[in-house]
Length: 103
Image 1 (cartoon, rainbow, N blue to C red):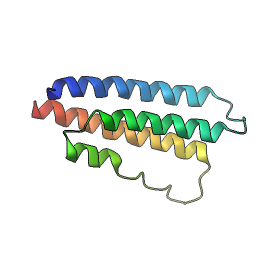
Image 2: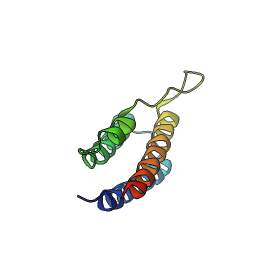
Image 3: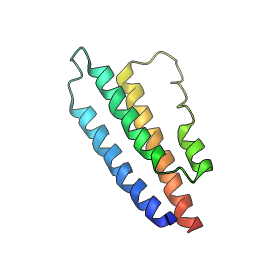
Image 4: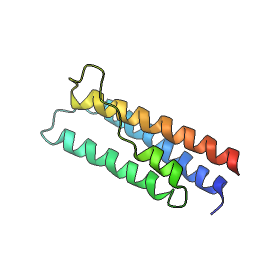
């Protein structure tokens, strides 16, 4: 598959991540299983992104790097989820740019 097609797929997944964050912001996050639900949504999104890059090991490794913890180390799950969403989007943006340059 040409790089531009992979970049286009990643752009769609990036937009999905923006929507995921919008939905998380709109959620009251008061249900007992809120954290588990949102963590699974983020994990599924990450898996979709990673499955788009099987033939791009460098880009895949960058996306699979752990998200650094919060500076104070004492963060509730929701702010941590927002940070993770933002960090993944940044990595996807960089990957899209790199793929477009390589194409």
